Length: 216
Ligand code: AP5
Image (cartoon, rainbow, N blue to C red; front, top):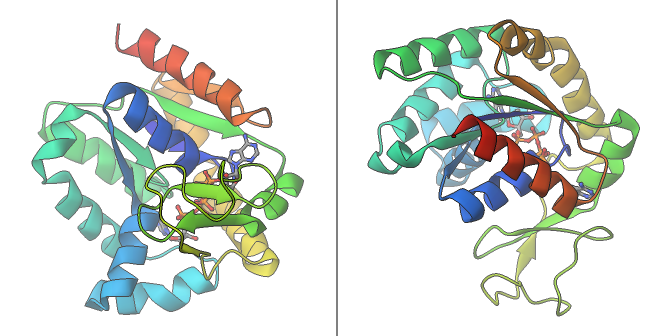
């Protein structure tokens, strides 16, 4: 299952909930790239400046890290792709990779949001430094201030690319290079459009309906 949507649409938030609800595995190329940057690998060094500028990392780097991750055994449970594919070349490579394994995309969900609201959503975001649980200054605070609901951690962090200027660059990249994939998956009859300006819980319920329907 693919989650498509601009920065701040809720891909990561909902992917983590789908993991909890259905035992699927979230595979976020953004998270994999940030791990490569933190580890100082060759791919990470090349990706760092590109990500901080809000542009897309080259297809060859992204496909290499994705293939490594997809070679791990847990993906047999079913994958939620969060932030991948993002270009026509990535979509073609994914189709080929899945076909090799006798698989195909089950559903491509387009989370439909207003761009104007995304700058506020992304600028207010922070995550638990220990477990990665996501929060928001206004929309999703921990039940106990300063304590992660999930793991009890007390240290939180913000992403280097979560500032208003970079978010606008990321929105531009999304509309130029990724939004055309909506038509690609529509032509494969796997597209699901989900209005994603409502509550996190409401969107979770809509996605649960889709998973139930496509896996029946
Ligand atoms: P990536 O990490 O994928 O970032 P993104 O696509 O810009 O998406 P975000 O993580 O910002 O948003 P999200 O949709 O996950 O929203 P979230 O759930 O956190 O990519 C980062 C960079 O890596 C890219 O710019 C690029 O350089 C590179 N990259 C990654 N993949 C690549 C690829 N395939 N090819 C090339 N380059 C690649 O929600 C945001 C906030 O809003 C949170 O605080 C959340 O709590 C809150 N929120 C969520 N839902 C709601 C709601 N319904 N109402 C109110 N608040 C909400």
